[in-house]
Amino acid sequence: MNQKVVLLWTNSDKDAAFKMVFMYAHYSIQNKWWQEVEIIIWGSTTKLASEDEEIANELSRLMTEDGVKISACITCADSYGGNVTEKLRSLGADVKPMGPVLTEYLKSGIHVLTV
Image (cartoon, rainbow, N blue to C red; front, side, top):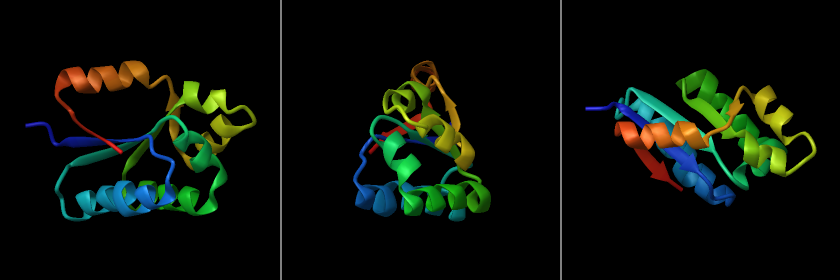
């Protein structure tokens, strides 16, 4: 059985981020529910993550303390202009085209939870 879960984070509501996405990612690692956890930042969440200090700090903590992988859709980030892509990369996110990656995850049976 695949022991990876991907949290596809598309909802730019901060409560959804803190009370679902980040909480589930943290406890999944802490309680060993999954061996690997990845958060994909997609859509309007790319802008939120690049602008909100609390969100950025929590993403950094999840990466450094919990080992959660953070990826982001470059097409989404670039669509907001400014330096959204650069800010996400400076946080440590792997910013790249995510459509092919997500498709491969789905085809290979990796568990994907969309929020």
